[in-house]
Length: 402
Image (cartoon, rainbow, N blue to C red; front, side, top):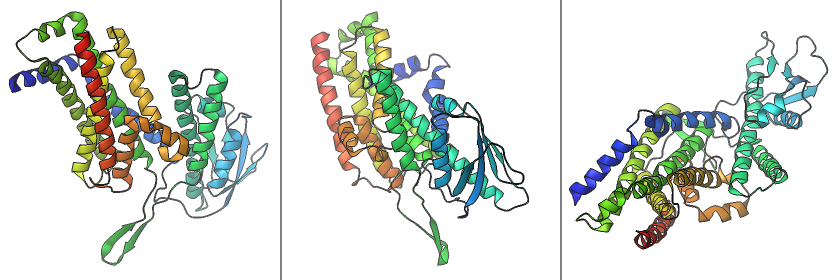
């Protein structure tokens, strides 16, 4: 039996990586998205220890844009310890900012936009002003990015049926996100005698921590839910039926398929954890056992859901669409793309019906609050309940269908 299971796991890896391009979706794209999302959220979430000195410098702003984000830009500049003043032309020898005409349009479209900052090389305040402007723009761009992703998922999941509803959803998320980011959590590090470091507690993850944990949840869900595609493809090709008539128990065949996909997901998780730590400096907590337990429980819940999906869809095309859509929807709604702490309390209560919510909650506790195994046991328990329910229902439907 062990030999058969190992053979199924080996075959799963061979099929998954039959083409070199598979590695792009398995590891390269998740890390690239982690970097992109981290940069998009940078400045919006990071309290950071590199805050410039507390000065109030006047900044003259010439804006060729009358779009909806210009006023938000002025508010963000004001909360970044600057005194912005709108003018028609920039005076000589001042701190000045030129805003292009497509500023709002490009940010709302999720595109990069360039503003021109005029500094005074002869004064020591230039570097501080540059950091303040960069922080303000980052908060605004990050809020627009989060809102656009949320609106897109709202349209795709049916929460926003019309353009007006999608726009209202965007506006609400944008305002809430921007308001939460105007006073980001600052984590000062105090140095005491003996070179001992004392850190104040945080409530929100940094942008790198949020991006790394969120992309783990997003991409590993695609891999684990891919169990549905494997089962459907083998059913359509007749391979599954031939396996079921072999001298092996049905549970062995089905368990082997799920264990193989589970192993694949575990490998991807490990690589993404290592990539987050090495490339982005993410500290995955002090309790490796707690991290492993949360990840295993999340993987079991997701692969169980994948098996359940396999009993619902009928074609490979349906399975592929459902897997990607379901993974993205669960990730977005469960807080993988933005911290749940910035969402309304009612929303946080509703999304507890999703396994991705419990996974992100546990990862955030490990990353931000230094939680141990005992602290994340409620999340592990919830994920195991999801795994049990999904697997039991999937096995029942599988036996009836096959």
